[in-house]
Image 1 (cartoon, rainbow, N blue to C red):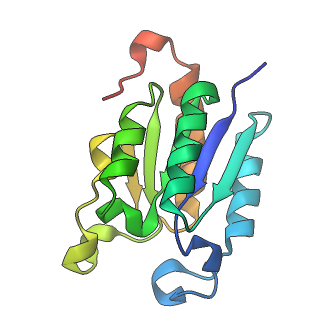
Image 2 (tube, rainbow, N blue to C red; image 1 turned 45 degrees about the vertical axis):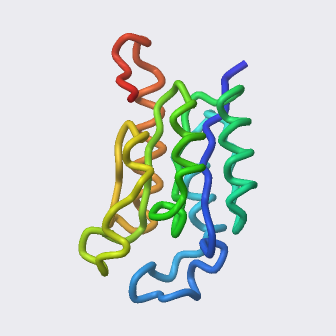
Image 3 (cartoon, rainbow, N blue to C red; image 1 turned 120 degrees about the vertical axis):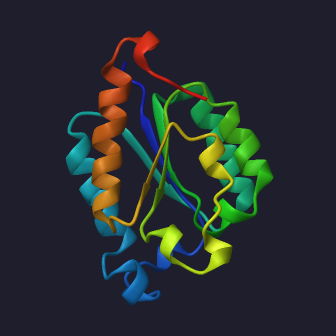
Length: 152
């Protein structure tokens, strides 16, 4: 049985399409999920969103036991949560950190993600399309020989 790919989304992303569309666009999280599932083809996906740091950590622990990779948009937790970083550091497979906006062009508080220390790769500024790129990249990374995948 193929291990699922976990796509984890942090706080306020359930409000995509309504929340600051000039920064995050008009695409809803449900539409992003559909894009991910289409891009994944037959690859199973666990697509989840929470406003709770605790829940996000629990899902990372679950993924550690069952997933082939994680795509995570930790949203505001990117800049504050050492606990999420510590959970990600336990994950042995590829991790892609994703941000819809280009965090490096935003206010200073949004420019330093703690999660990047655990990520295999980081995608920023591609809008909803970034999720499709991340799904394609994770599939490529997990189909390589184990020695070819570089994890922190």
